[in-house]
Amino acid sequence: MSMKRRGTVRMVVRESPTVEYKESVTPTFLKTVSAYANYGTGKIEFGVDDGGVAVGLSDPVAECLRIENMINDSLDPAPRYTLELDENRGTVTLTVYEGQDKPYRSKGKAYRRNDSATVEVDRFEYGRLTLEGSNLTFDALTSARQDLSFHTLEHKCIEHLGISELTSDIMRTLRLLGKDGYTNAAAILADNNEFPGIDCVRFGDTEDVLLDRETTTGLSAIEQVDRAVAMFARYYRYERIEGVERVQTDRIPLEAFREAVANALVHRTWDVQANVQVALYDDRVVVTSPGSLPAGLTTEQYLYGQISVLRNPIVAEVFLKLDYIEKFGTGIARIRRAYRDSINQPVFDIRGGVVAVALPVTDAFEGSGEEAQVLKALSGGRIMSRSEIEKQTGLSRARTLSALESLLSRNAIMKQGTGRATKYERA
Image 1: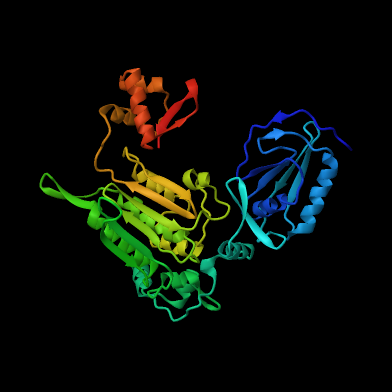
Image 2: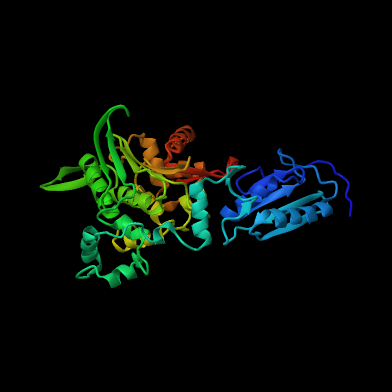
């Protein structure tokens, strides 16, 4: 059935990692089909220009058949997809579903989405897709090195698991020992670990001034975490006198730092030859992990959800059993919880193939009295409008607005809605 081109219709969704517009059907869309099948379900709207205007296809029925043939001829393996024809707009919507038989290749190459663009994956990403398609993870593969010792791991297991020694049966239960020998997870936790480690640097007034540095490599990942915590304690832990007692206080919550470092090791990509970076400043600590988020995990899910896609599930399971991390999927929540009474809040940065967590000091309130009153009003998970905050605090409209703007700029609170429907809550 032939269909005439219709007048323009404005779309409401801009191009994104999961939405792409194509004014016409050209072979370039096949790369995006590969990307969606490899990394997450997405849609391609044909008959829509880059500006989001539906201009229609001259013969959308014929184009549906053409799209189907192009996918079946060019994609290996063929992904699961659906085609939907909108006769009113003269458009075709192709929905490509993430598959299990990765990597999905277009003309022999695999692709991923980078914001609203489609790019070819590098050899590391291709290898990870191959593992995922085989239902394997890097830490489950047999280690190239088998002459491994586990004194640190055994000591921790005796302490936390109530065992008397680390036997082969226990190693198998922990999935550190398989039918072909030790796994990569075992090599990561071994005393003579040859994978990248942690680089801790204490900076002065500028990053040109290095006051202290400790690079922990060639050690069990468990000991690497312990040494990072020890260096953290040297600079952010102090004692104060309360009455006749000495009370130990952390300028940055220890549980937040420990969780950030442990998570950096658990979720990092071990095939990248780069250390986890721990930068210690006077006012904050920044923990940077090599590797972007695991495939299938969005930034929103990482920051606000309870969803945990494990890149190294065996290492994660051992860290969980040894109390280095909480249950899967709650690491970010645990870090946020450690800052629930602080005006300074952690900042999470996900870009450029790394995941960074900035943990600010909490020992000094640098805000105004009005800001403190607003934070108190929003405590306990309350979500309030400006007028409700004014009523709760007794502040004037101008002072409330000033405090809210300051707190928003410091990531201490979040705003939802617009206009009269605007409300605020603690970050």
